[in-house]
Image (cartoon, rainbow, N blue to C red; front, side, top):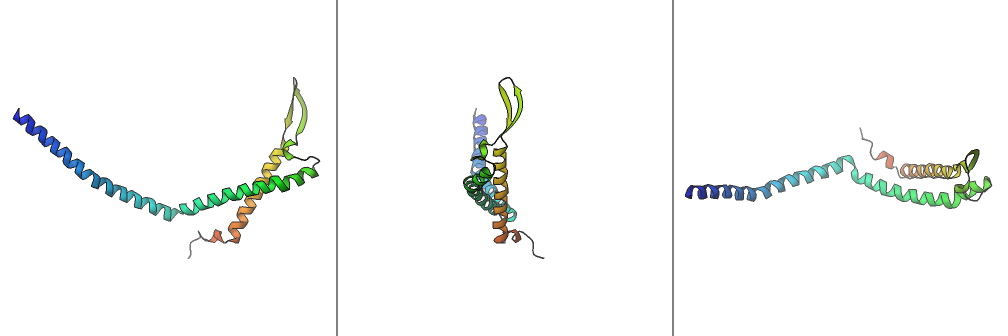
Length: 138
C-alpha cells in the first residue's frame, strides 16, 4: 500500500507541476498569436478596409435616400407614373386568374441606386487620393 500511495503522490506532483507551467506556456502562445494578429492587421490593411466598409455603408444609405427622394420621382414623372416601384409590364400571359407581370420599375430604381453609389464612392476615393495609398513606392 505505501508504494501505491507514493506512486499516486508522484503522479499528483507531476500534474501539479504541469499545471503550474501551463499558464506560462499559454501566455507565451497567446502573446505570439496576438503579435501575429497585429502584424496581419498592419500588413493587410484590415483597419483601412473596415473604415472603408463603414464609409461605404454610410455613403450607400445616403445615396439610396437621394435616389429614392430625388432621382426616382423625376424618372417616374418622365415615364408617366409617380412611383417607380409601381411601374410594371403586363405581358398579357395568364394562368387562370393570374397575369404575368414584370416589376421593371423597381429593378430600374435598384440599378440607378447601384450606379449612383458606385459613382459617389469612386469620386470620394479619387478626390481624396485614397487610391494612391496602397501603391508601393519604387
